[in-house]
Length: 263
Image 1 (cartoon, rainbow, N blue to C red):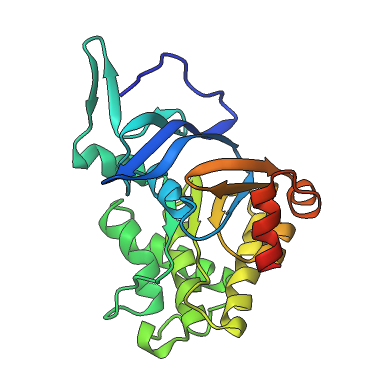
Image 2 (cartoon, rainbow, N blue to C red; image 1 turned 30 degrees about the horizontal axis):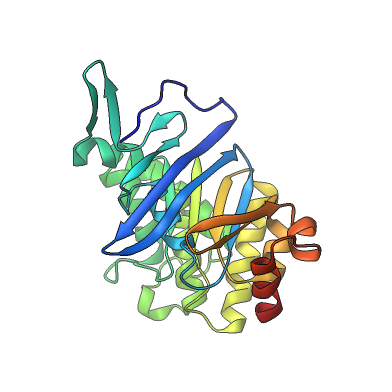
């Protein structure tokens, strides 16, 4: 594990440096480096198996990696530097680091025995030890923000897939994360529900100023919300730039090939 002295600049919230990940003989990530500025919306695009989700999961160490460094909000994820070298933090410290990162998965992972409202306020109360009354009021506001003020007393089984995903987004926001990660949040939804969720995410991107990194195959959504689009293939970043640069005038042949298949 390489440990450098220089920390990312203050306006950089995510700094990945030469991240490498292998599983068996398969090289999942190959020296992936990327900085994400505060308030930036970055969309990761690329063919299946490109390493997009794997890279996203390394940011909060849901996936481990063999070499490289990951910084979030100026802190080295997973490792603490000492004069004797670097050592892996224990699970308690990893949990502390992850509190600043919201993660919305492909599948909603809601607590089935809790209402939508309870799903949103539960973690801040139980994990963060915040006052319940305060968290309940904030949960109501968040559910209203994602268009579910009339559904807050319903259980997940009584909600559509799109509504469950919007509850999951509200639940992540309830932790006041500095960074939101979205792993193909519409992949399990039909087209109508997909539009519901994408509209909520587009509103977050334009109104909240939250830093977001999004893995998706929704090209037109990426065009609307992204400050920067990053194309991955074979575990590497092959091209990046503004939506206009990448989607309208791609340079790399693999990017052109990918876009020809999905647009």
